[in-house]
Amino acid sequence: MNVLVACEESGTVREAFRKLDHNAWSNDLIPCSDDSTHHLEMDCFDAIFYPAAPDVKWDLIPTDVLVPPAPGTQEYLDWQKVWRMPPSPERKRLRSVTYQGIADAMAEQWGSL
Image (cartoon, rainbow, N blue to C red; front, top):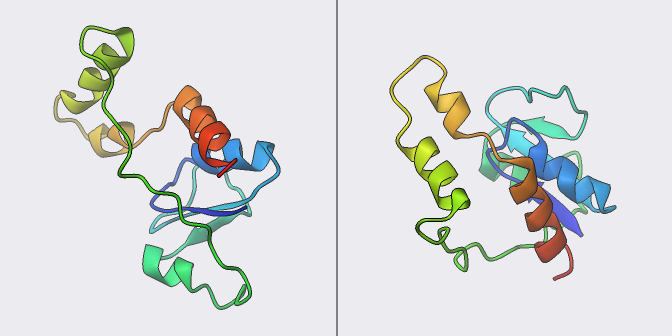
């Protein structure tokens, strides 16, 4: 599957898909934090039509089927910790981090579509 993980600088989701042998790339306006060669530093819409790979057609994965964690679970408390994070210079970056378990679950579930 050809996977473009839009707006991802960490590479966590991209690498979860690559571990399952997908042609996965990430893109963001800023450089990736893992120095991967599978990261496009450009706008999401430009990455979709990346001229260096005109034959690549990205497979679309519906994200409107995602549901929040069940209230009272540890997953819910972790999710709330992110959303209620106090202001700080690192807040923007920390709120955008994808947990490894979530990235692995995305690759396992959506990689077989």
